[in-house]
Image (cartoon, rainbow, N blue to C red; front, side):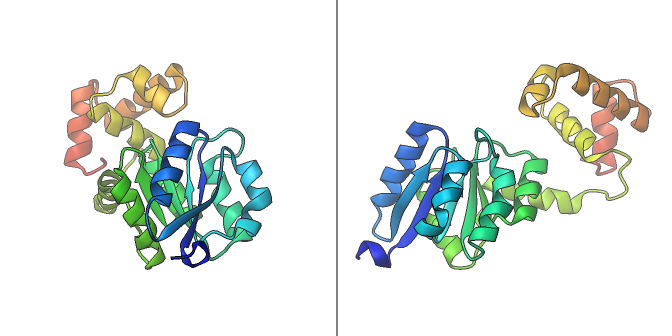
Amino acid sequence: MSTENKIQVVIIEDDKTIREGFSYLINATSKFNVVSSYSNVEDALQKLQANNPNVILLDIELPGISGIEAIPKIKSLLPKTHILMLTVYDNEDLVFKALTNGASGYLTKNSNTEKIVDAIQEVMDGGAPMSMNIAKIVIKSFHKNRNSPLTKRETEILEQIAEGKSRSKIAKDLFVDLETVKSHIKNIYSKLNVHSREDAIKQAKDNKYI
């Protein structure tokens, strides 16, 4: 198959090893061609129209413009191009921001190469590929009690507490300081009228807040 007839892919990823690894593996297939790859959104935006890709693999945490912020900018330039988020982050807030902004799919970087290659084809066929853990987050959100007294961020923090994460780990994962996490936890306890982590988790699960 000539390069022109292949599905054209652009990769925007700041980690050089990951970027080159994906480029090599995607180019090794018969259906796809990596037309270009970039380490940041700013460089990509200058050349994307010339690249005219069918699919863009887009990292979330990038220097400068983030992957989430980049989605509407890319869609305004290339409305028909499919954007697949490729990230280490699988928290609910980022998933929904990406999908709301116009991403066509959401994969975590620990997905095997075959899954990523299949996802490129799936999105071209009209699908919305997601890693299993991402799909669970989306499904879980539909089962939640919509009358929860907790804010989105409080819910996110309580879910991470329920997963056994420490306060410092939650702060790191959510890019906030430790005092902010402590303040949210205080508000959670107050709203649920509980005084311990175990009671907060139990009440939230019983009422389908998480």
